[in-house]
Length: 250
Image (cartoon, rainbow, N blue to C red; front, top):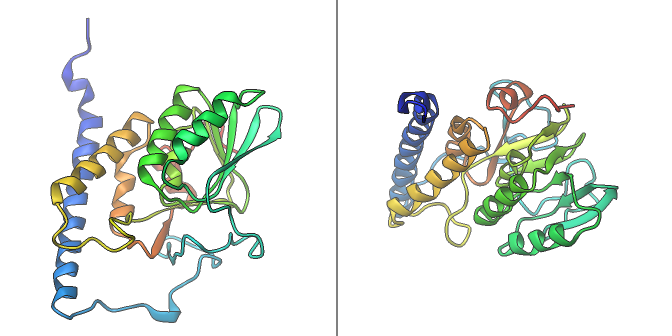
């Protein structure tokens, strides 16, 4: 006998709450778009905005963000322009670089043919294509692969969707996991003329995906209120609260 529908209410309520937050954020973006069209602009933080290399603390978690920037731990060695899969040790592989369009199908093919078969993916990425991150994430979960972010390494923008897919998720205390609004169209902020229902559908898919991976969709409140040129760094307590960390966390 199936469980009563009421047993699903906590999960449904989280998604509905996330949708409400999204609606509020979307309304703000539409106002900003209309202001820009009228020749008005919002205040800018300018050069005083904290950089990614600066420490974060409660209430001070937004940093300037450039997806093409070098990794903070090694400024002379930028991340690859597309996802790369390399064997580290036995069944542990590194998956790093920008998530470009069509990367999901390419990486799925590489994982499928890799020997030995990957059991753990060490992630490092500034993000990129949301659709590819979701597609690849579903494959990672289907194959029961664990995910990990190591000390002083980063997982931003759509990369946390790959992190969420791990059957176990190991996150170093000095790793950096961040979320923000995704770009729409040709890397521009949402124009008022953009079809609202399409955006809602996309964000709804993201929240359903996160819930299916065991992540609290309310993490999207931080993404929806952080502009695309900034990143909101999730503190260890938030990573635990939204269920990114698991018992396998290091």
